[in-house]
Image (cartoon, rainbow, N blue to C red; front, side, top):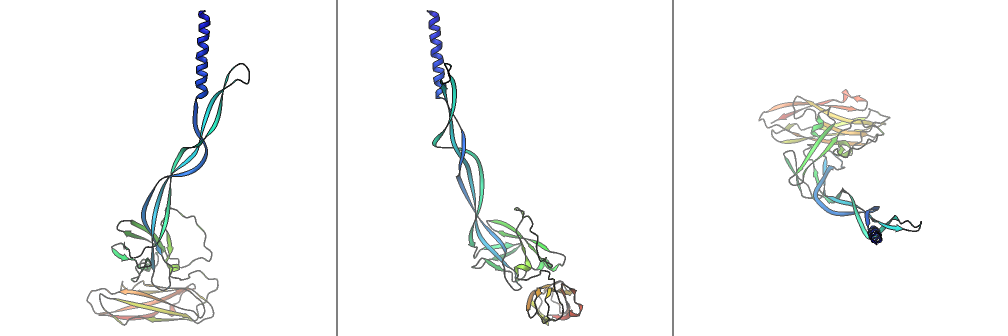
Length: 324
């Protein structure tokens, strides 16, 4: 009798265990379904670069931006593994696991961040700084460099790039690079762009000038005229304008003119023209700032012309300017 009771009790325990096992469900991640947004952060920002224009004055273009930081999560199907007893293969019960998709239930997976930049149009009537100089955009988000501060670094003939830092009171600083390619190759090689590097703009291209090296060049027929002030006032600003025209039969490539003087406020001033086709004209103006040293003197300046065929000494002209 006791033996029978022991056998019965063992059977009941085994049955209870197998029933519990049959109802146990193990959840796991299944097939990827979608990306979901958990939260979004927005930060006001701006972009700045050189605007395409013509003439002698670089133009900065500002655009309003919103930087969106999206906190995302990948969502997957929820799979449950249901353990059941399989008695189809004989008198011995065996456990079988069946994966099943839970309808309407997703399981969170990897989390990641997306960053999106939303353009807000021209940043009008906003104040920025370049160094210690305060500047304000117009209704179109533009600032015309009337004092040609962006040209000044390139009056050093060996310098072909300059990093510019723009600062806003609440949105921080932005950097971009200005380059100057005086001998641009006809076909440029595409280089990999460093995503972390500041954007770069070619100064001459932004002014609508073409300094691409030409296969066929001439030098005859170039006519140069100068508008140089005879006298200037100390502490004031003045302008020098150079006009050129190509009366020859061939294009004259990559034309530029440079000023030479013992006076730092005159020396090194660069005047850019680029490629001048037959029958075409061009003009370039530079602002000069006269020192306020209260002296009256005569300053001498010479202008030398270069093109793709080299320096043209016969084109050099000299002037004197009286400073009052």
